[in-house]
Amino acid sequence: MTVAAPSAAQTLSAAPSTRATAVVTLTAPRVQGQAPAAAKTITVDYGQPHARGRAVPTELATDGTVWRTGANSSTTLTTQADLTIGGVAVPAGAYSLYSIREGGKYFLIINRNTGQWGTEYDKSKDLARVPLTARTLHEPVESLQIAFVPPASGPAAGKLTIAWGTLHLSTDWAAK
Image 1: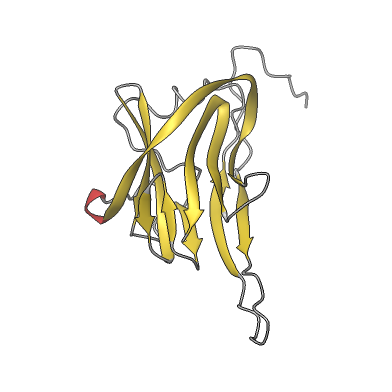
Image 2: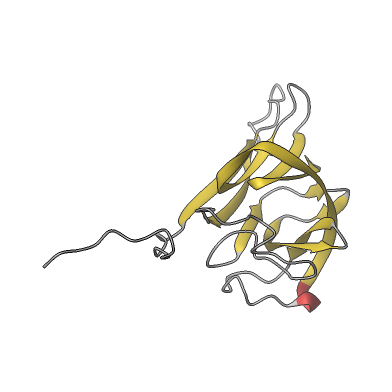
């Protein structure tokens, strides 16, 4: 038996997406004479899709269509601290994160429903839609990356970033 190499016109099946996690651990300064405060974590757990030659994100998330901001099950934000994301109060708890592009502008959707498959979005459970700043990257990012980027120094705050293909999205975050 011989196996022919695929021609350029054939499509190869893609390998499964991987899981990825972005974590921030917040610690409070120790007050003399008091027990140290317990550290609090902020975690984003997401399926990490890979571009594999696709025009990301325009081919995958058309204007007006909610995107799961990852692959497979919904992307989950779990925070032990009260936060602000893009100026919106986000109480400690667990949330699903989705994205949408509307009229050329991008928004991060923070949704109270968790544990569902990524395509099972329920708009009535939205906590907020946060505007995202978009820019084009010179070098494409092959695999979706979500990160908390802290400032060089200072309080527990920074940028929440989402990068895939040539698209880079960001918004401010801060612990309260």
